[in-house]
Image 1 (cartoon, one colour):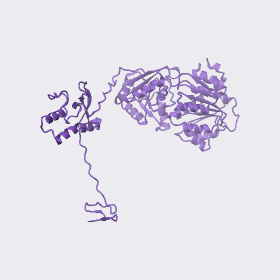
Image 2 (cartoon, helix red, strand yellow):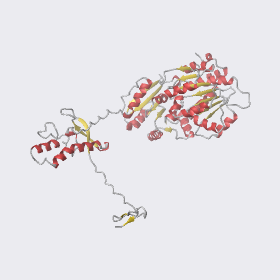
Image 3 (cartoon, rainbow, N blue to C red):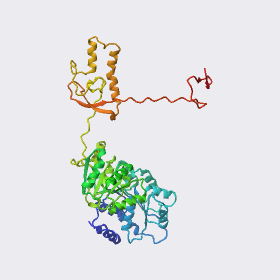
Image 4 (cartoon, helix red, strand yellow):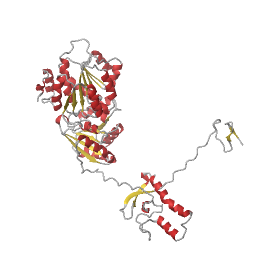
Length: 516
């Protein structure tokens, strides 16, 4: 199928061909014909599949058919996006495809002054691309009216939910006229998004180019098992040894993004971080430098990287695995766009194994593991056995009656213990094992077990224990004790006079101070 078969206007066809597009993507082939007829559409597709053109082209054709000749221009189409970057890119698409059409568009988002945006609204716009927060602000101030709206587009609805904008979206929807066309696009369909779609769509056509929560086939996925402390070294190694011209690195936190970017700069790799705490100008400057090749690595959080479209980006690195599996789909969707090939590399430490299992269940495939690398993590340390009262004496810490590691067993033990059995033999011989000494001997193992249960890991060394006679040896903690410093009691002060109360002073029956 070609764009000529989609029954688009000649002006739109010329704009599409000027961008070098000849064949529509699968989501465009399925969504555009239904959108041109005015039907509501539920589109399920990953990022980078061309879904922006799937709703921009039919909207431009519909609005241009009855464009106002002059006078006031009410907002006739609203496109709601989760991030500033995505809003800017959607606005650029309307600008590109709408060349030669008598239509105006505006983009409004937070993080910048609102005066230029208000002026654009006063001049009149046909298509308004907005983020929820800034849109609600301008609506409350009376600068935006949606009474004449004809088409409503909710783009990347699942990210709206992830970022906590779902309540703002519902507030915007309440202000929309009931008679409208709604185009609903999402990469995944969690239950809350399904409920939202049912509440705002009327007899929709569902178009799906791949199973929900799946990843593009053109993206090669790899996972490296590595200790958390070794991630920085592994990332530097891949950037210096591998054939990676540019890479987008994802972290879970803003501070983590700053730290990784700083560490890469120290290693001689040009990089910058973008996240929610960065100003809009700083984020745009970093994106421009990354696109131009001035920056080799861009470190970003999930929110800041949403909507980033970098031509020719071949590498995405998950420095931290996301704790929400759907975010993995969005992350690696930054590469392998529009049919191009790409590589998604993930670092996984011991605490992130559960995240990896959730991701593999979500995408319905196992991510190949790269074993041959210099920072491969070793086997997990064995779990220490629990210290019961009847455990073998070798499990007891040094200095509590136990046998030192490697020392021979005392004769006559019968495989029992050291100090405890020796005390019992003294009692059998009628020695000094009776009375108070016998009670202390019985209580010592229990007290030692309680103390060992409270030991901090930093104070542990490795010992050997057998949980039962004849059982194999197991590594257990051995404790080195420190006495906690004693705290001096704070001096009591007189409640009224504000002076220290001496030991000879006491409270009188009337509540005051008196002396005996």
